[in-house]
Length: 104
Image (cartoon, rainbow, N blue to C red; front, side):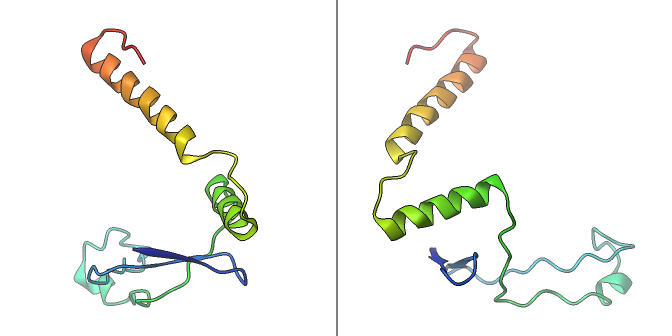
């Protein structure tokens, strides 16, 4: 897929080769769409739609990444940093499964 970042409005546009899939609008009396009578009442969302990026920590991370790309600076946390964190997490899983300490 491709993620496109716009300086005009905070959003991410993703393209891929998978068939399009839209989740249906939730009916207030049938949120799980169990009944055909209620699914007829709701219209699915448009195939290509904008999803707003609300002010969340994840979106702050996206903005920081965009700023690094725009300015050509190295991010505060790099992929190298992430590798170490993944190693620690995986060691935790291995230790939990085996009941033994795991060396890093």
